[in-house]
Amino acid sequence: MEVSHDHDYPGARPIPAQHQSPAGSALAIILLAISAFIIVTTEFIIVGLLPNLARDLGVSIGTAGWLVTLFAFTVMLCGPVLTGLVAHFNRKRLFVFLLLVFAGSNALAAAAPNIWILGLGRLLPALALPVFWGTASETAGVLAGPEKAAKAVANVYMGIAGAMVFGIPLGTLAGDAFGWRGTFWGLSALSLLMAGLLAWVMPRIAKPVKIELGDQLRTLKDRAFLGNLVLSVAVFTAMFTAYTYLADLLERIAGIPSSAVGWWLMGFGVIGLGGNWLGGRLVDRSPLVATFGAVVLLAVGMTATVPLAGNHGWLAIALGVWGLANTALYPICQVRVMRAAGAAQALAGTLNVSMANAGIGLGAIIGGAVIETIGIARIGYVASAIAVVAMLLVPVVARLSRKEA
Image 1: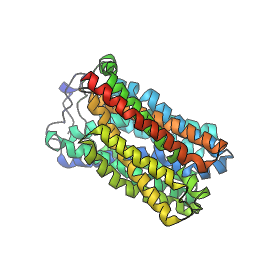
Image 2 (image 1 turned 180 degrees about the vertical axis):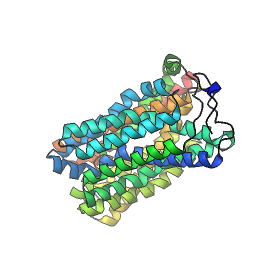
Image 3 (image 1 turned 120 degrees about the vertical axis):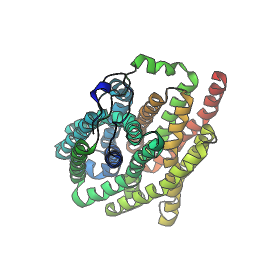
Image 4 (image 1 turned 30 degrees about the vertical axis):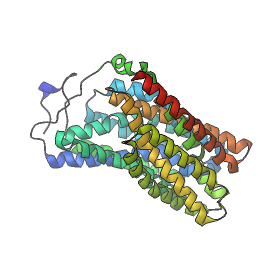
């Protein structure tokens, strides 16, 4: 049952419709989680497809890596503003529109005759992704009601975690079986399916309160908060300098057949589930200490991968350490930045996603430059050096936090 139009105006409290079907709300939350899986898979699937994509389009792996940078920088630059501008829109229509954007852009990427059209196919979903990130979990909480809001939000984030663990490896395996274009066609079809299902199932809810963008941005005056954002940039730059080219590294350095790379990425992600749990536990005690410890593990894993690449058993251990730290840093950085923000929690979450994407884009640029100048065998060492910079930033941010307090 739809919400009464008496409440359908800017400034209305975001409450679900009265007598709304619990089963309908629960199904809508599941569909949002599946949509999150598809959307985040769309962002990161390029990592597993880079080698085949570069060969097919006749470009270098470093040039193909700019597709990662394009997506990440678009999210970074447009995410907070777009989310702030549309956060009060009708959520049902907003999500259907976002998924149609993903369906169309993935189809464009699948049919792209060259790197430029493929770039356009990556630019469009990069505009839509931060809006979804900024509104999906809040909407799930509204649909579930106050008593079940936390569980509903966790379910949406499970879709995001699932994309990191299973979406990218499965997409890589699909790319090997059906070609990288087939992977994008599959994502397009799934996005279209989710748009249709959400249009059919999702109940309408009242428009959220409209808050002026200027009021939301006041938290940027806090130096400790800004320091935490800079730390997130450094952390994600270290992570994605090497992770962007992990599939290429496994093929060229470790000698893993392209048909098996997806399974190695799957193992990397499955171990990362433990990192997600560990990061969630450690960050409650001290976000900055958890950040420092996870970055140390990250540097160890990335440094050890190439020297151990000749022995697949030892390589698996190095990748396990890397994967554990890599996935732990997602919730650690998100919680650390949101805690530093005080009251502006929603904006802080979106800004951290933007800064993470700044690091992702920088990492892709740096990693591509390393490959083309000194070789892919050095990429883990360069990424670890950036991780050391992130470690050195931790006490600086801690000092800023004490001064602001």
